[in-house]
Image (cartoon, rainbow, N blue to C red; front, side, top):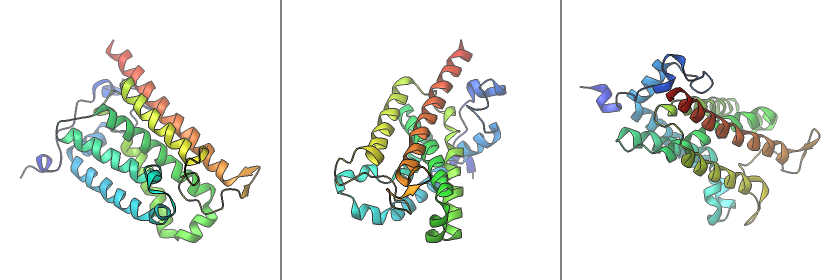
Length: 235
């Protein structure tokens, strides 16, 4: 039985990343690890779909408190894992989508870093309410989201239109989560402290929002800079 044929495909060419021509910050993973991800792409898709299902279960209480019309802005991390599952699956069936890849890259970098950020900043109550096992799982699994985002440059060169769509979506999501209470309040992931509780010189909400703003800019920079480097190398 052809295991690669059953679980994935031969990986796409590494292109400008070959021989280290793409900067390490744009393609930080070893080529061998990227190849494994593509050769076993359906395993990666399945893991992300399981993570998505767990994430929706984790958000069940927040869904119950938020109006249905705002649900799209609630499950941030599960939404990101669903996007990368769809992006990789579309490549696996020969219908690769730059827009899906850009959305997945933004989501997995942003939420893969934001969640560990708030877990560490607000660790006393997160640890108390989640317990050590779930706390460790959330921390490690979200960092894994960042790692898998860096295989996507093999299937897209981040065209401007795709990056624009991802930027627009994650900007709107940012506004709904922290700044624009359209219907019955903002929709950010529930935090273990009240939003207005003082935290050093500011509040819990502002600390979480500051991280979300910075981590919306980070994948935007990485995607566009990767695009620029790719075009420069091709020329």
